[in-house]
Length: 334
Image (cartoon, rainbow, N blue to C red):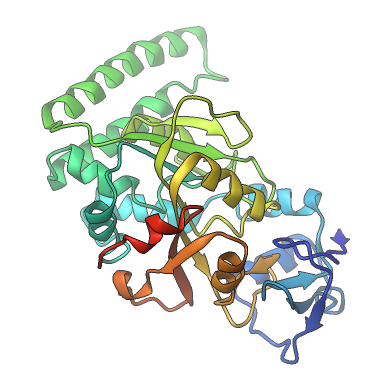
């Protein structure tokens, strides 16, 4: 189930240096992987951490092959816990991941008409746009969330009798109508055209990223009125003002291609990524602070936004915005 990753997953360099300190306590993700894959400690400890000498990326080698990673992100941990927790807390009017002052900063600097995110719909700022497009009332949040879940759940009729299928069909139509009425009642204005791009990587949560049997992409389409596209699709007409990548660039086997594609179709790309000094073995790789130097040296001009976000979190993270146009980045105001 292991595979050699001798080239950097980001910059493709083969120049690595083995990290001196390999020890990291096993978190609950790692413990579940070891248990479900029936791994011995000896075999699991074959995974070692290396640092890329070109882009400073941390990478495990050897690591799981694509067949095994698909099982990890579809079966062992198929649900993206943090993403769903953000949405559920939002619907219940509790604290959710708002990224500090990031949304305000972005709105003050970019006139956003077309906005996209990558792979996980409840990790970024779709919820912030949602708050601006509808009357931000706790009752509305709860009702629209519950009704969207109910509508999509009722459309699942496999295994039911013909009579039960007919009843479910009638109820689901009523639920869909109620969902439309709730949204219409609280609607203020459409802020932006929203899109979600996915790459169906075996390194990311996909078909099993469900809550109450409802997939995150399906629910996002109903809540945010967004379009879902494959990142490999040719984009001809839409030029994006901003493309957000929130903790998902390290959940694809082609992170550089994803970033380059986003930069090719959008004026700005906003990235939140892990920059841990150590890397857990449930991840193939992790970025470091050196990523910005690497990007700037390769004509991808960036600006560190950590001081803008001012977000306190336990894990080490980096927020930055980048563009192929140096002047666009230089014109950003605090």
